[in-house]
Length: 334
Image (cartoon, rainbow, N blue to C red; front, side, top):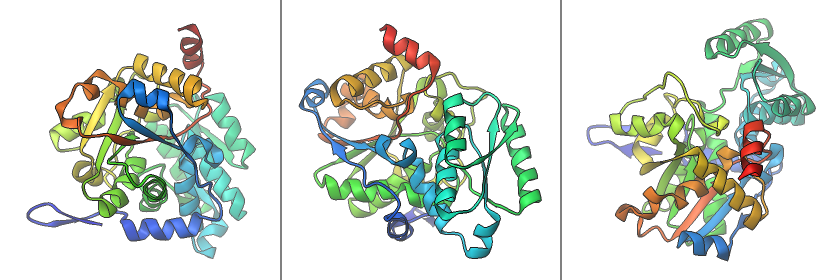
């Protein structure tokens, strides 16, 4: 997709054509996830909400779409040497599963402080775990060492056109399933998901609003939108451990041009949204997955004149399998 930026046309790392091609490529392997609705949540929010349940995707999160597209895009010579990534979350498990389905090795560099349940998922799906220190520098250094030793193909968790195209298949499905939606709310971290969602949505339905949901303790995307450039935070503090990454040079142009606004929320609002998903939708989502609902229920969204016309809202429940100890204690204790 190209965007007219005034003096030049911006060409992105993915577009509606690459996303449609990705959908055809991965369709036999992914779940076409359901869209759930709830009159109770509609009443609470004052809007019509449509929940795209990527928590029911293979691997428990949307990440399988992008990983599957990346793995299936490899030619035979590339595939034979396998894939490598550095990740402590759902991308690691998703890439392991996608590689397993194609019968190729997946080398996963994992920081020593990664959640135990997510490491177990990597192993369960056949990924080869290689430990690093819990710093981005160490993760990248170890990944480069693995690349040199194996000749495997690097598949970045989000800053990759193949990943963006795979994640964009969510948008194609959602617009087919709920033609009436006028707004889509998407979690934002590195930007692979929201950039993928925004590209086809804005192409198919230019009037649609694309809103990012972000924790206040990791609000680099909100700051980046205000500054007009990528802002990298010195540190983050949020229960949503899947939303701590910084925007990439491939995802940022899409976020800059096609994401209409960023809504930031407190961790307490995320926990409440998790509770509502569980008690009303009967769906267990991790903090990162529940943040879209938290954003729609937030005072800043509810009271803003800018979003009064957002009546039919698609919310991407990006992942399930909550296993964060602090999340469990706070969720049960409230």
